[in-house]
Image 1 (spheres, rainbow, N blue to C red):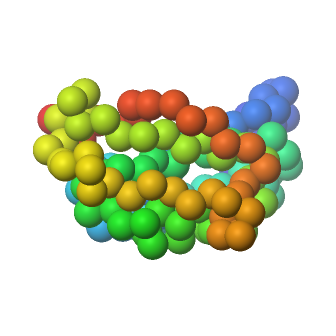
Image 2: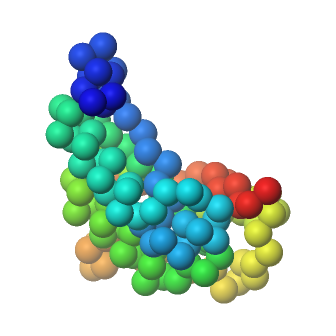
Length: 130
């Protein structure tokens, strides 16, 4: 209902700070939403007529493996999102204590099948529990 109202008022672009579709990673990052809720919100935006939808995913989060990251990328791509921003979580800014040498590096090669239509590399974006 709110999304439809936004659309009728002329809003033509939405951006969702999903961070991850994995519930355990979301919880470790202090997020209050769940992966399923993010999927539902993205689908509702599409159903309301939004075509220009972007979402932010993050990598290097506590407890996030390469497989978890790739699953989140595949979920985002499977939803037909037109723009995916992939951001690196910096422990020095977010407060997370992690060994950067063990952080997963996303495999975005064509062979991985995980390449979205666009990726913006930036960071940091995650703010852990305060």
